[in-house]
Length: 449
Image (cartoon, rainbow, N blue to C red):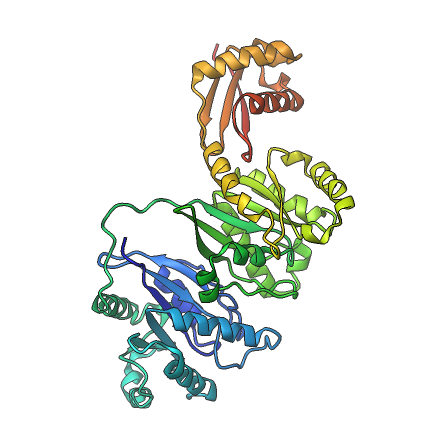
C-alpha cells in the first residue's frame, strides 16, 4: 500500500492557518479564532483526490506572539516535529500585514529544520483583493524559501483551487500516488472523552508506537483544558488500524460560558461524539465519579454509541483501596452497566493494551443482528420467567435497526408497558446474546387490528 504523504500547514500565530485548513478539507474541523495561539495540538484530516490522497496537518503557531505563554514552547516544539516529518509544507503569511520578526523566525526555522527535498508552498492568506497581489509579491520572492507562491482568501475561496492543484502537482512530483488497491478498510472511530485533566491525551500518547510518539505526540500538561481541538491519531495494533480522536475536556454548560474558546472546544467534542463509533470515557481513579462524568456517559448512551469506561491513574491507588474504588465506579454508573470497565495507567501502561480486544468486541456487538425466529424463541422464554404484564401477550418482536441494536415489540396497548418491564427484557437479552458495550433501544408498537 502506498505511503500516505503528510502536508503540514505552518506559520506564525494568526495568519489564517486553521481557516485555510478548514477550506481545504471542506468542513469546519479546526477551531478558528482571532486569538493568537488558538491551535495547540496538530489537527489532521485525510484529503482524498482523483490523483493522490494526503494527510493535511494544521499546526500551532510558530515564532511566538501568542497569549498562551505557559504552553508556547511546547506548541513550538510540536510544530517543529510536524515540520521535520512533513512531505510538503504550506507556509502561511498574512498578506494584510507587514512581515514581522515572527515571520522571519519561521523562515529561519524552515531553512534549518525541514528536510532538503521537501518543497514549500508559500500561501499568502487574507488576499481579499487580487488586484493588489502583484505589488506585494517581490518581498515574498525575496525570502527565497518557497517553490511556489499562491495568493489565497479562504473565506472567499480565492486561490483555493490553485493551491489544491499545486499541492497535487508537488506530491506527484515526489512520486506519491493514489492507492488503487481497494484494500482501504473503514477504521473504527474511537472518541476519547471525559472531564479536563483526567489523562485523555496521555492515554493516546501511551498507545502510540515509539516512532509515532516522536513524530507527533499530543500536548500534555497539568493545566486543565490543554487540548482544544479534536485530534485524530491512527494507531496500528496487530495489523489493524484504529482512529483515536482525543477531545477537549467536556465541562458543565455554566463553565463553558466563561470563555468563547472553551465553548468552541466543548462543542467540537460533542460533534466528535456524534460521529464516532465508540466512546472511551476516561475517569480519574483518584477522584470520585462526578455528575459531569455521569453526564458524559449519558450523552454517549443517548447517541447510541459503543461505550468503554477506562479508569486511569490506577497506579496512584493503594492495593487496599482498589476494590473500594471499583465498587464506587460501578455503583455510580449503574445506568450504563453494559459498558466494560478497564483499569489502567497511562504512566506505567499497565492494562492499557487490553483496550484493543474490548474495542473489537464492542465494535462487533453494536452492529449485531438477531434473526427474527431466534428473537421469537428467546422472547417466549424470557416472558415466561418474569411477570411482564402487557408484554406477556405480545405476538411479535423484530430487530428494526442494527446500530444501535433496536428492537420493536408489538403489543395490544403500548401505554400499559412499563419501563421496568423493558429493562427486564434488556437484562435478559444481554444474558443470551453478546451486547457488551452497546446500548439497546426498545420500542413498543400497538398491533394492527
